[in-house]
Image (cartoon, rainbow, N blue to C red; front, side, top):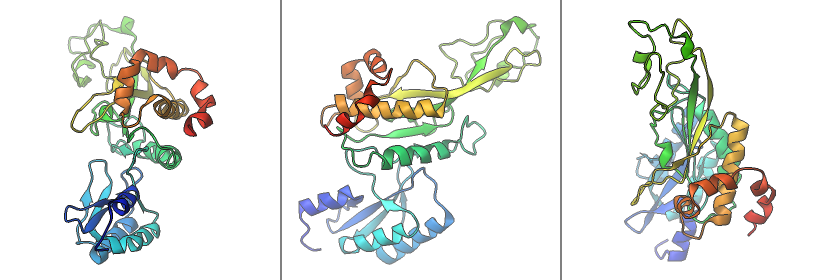
Length: 302
């Protein structure tokens, strides 16, 4: 295609084929669903870049793949080859973008199975909302613990797994060498008084470390950040006040957030700007109850 029009380039970009700087070729942006590929899929991608690209694969900042220097004439060939191993190009446009997840599934710090969760979010919100045009791109990051490895708090929605300790400080006997204090990564736990609530990250590392059951148990759940973004202007998301305690509650919340953004955001406006415009208190109030879900069809079709 020697005479590619701007309209044609725009169409292909919407399909996940991003123009290269040479003006002649494109990079196929491959969605990995949750940052995980099988060996069969990896082999297939290697064959695609050897046959249709320049033999190289790049890893995106959101754990997707880009296959550079693909001729526009070979786009359909690449689509067909990806489809054979349950992969697809995409992840562009003013829509829910591919989901990013840390390695909490296998990481010793992970408080839940991040990759399985991200896969479910992919199917329900990336694929399920693929036909819904939003004011701007919308990114979801899933982190297994407060270590913040994939920076969930600078996504439009950032989900972070927490393990909220239950303290029974009446049982503290003031051991000369406290067994809990050295387990606290942020050094906020003190015998007799417990942690500083303003500093404690709720990582759960202290749970079960006291022989006198000062920290006997905890509640696993998720803290959620709203309106983060990176790029030219970085914004850290606002932390919601309450801890989400179940996957069902989390998924309902994610859907409400997307619907709120669809209904309240202006075209070209990132969700962080929408949050600033409304104010975090009002956003949290709007996310309570079921009114957004009841108006789902109306909002989506607006």
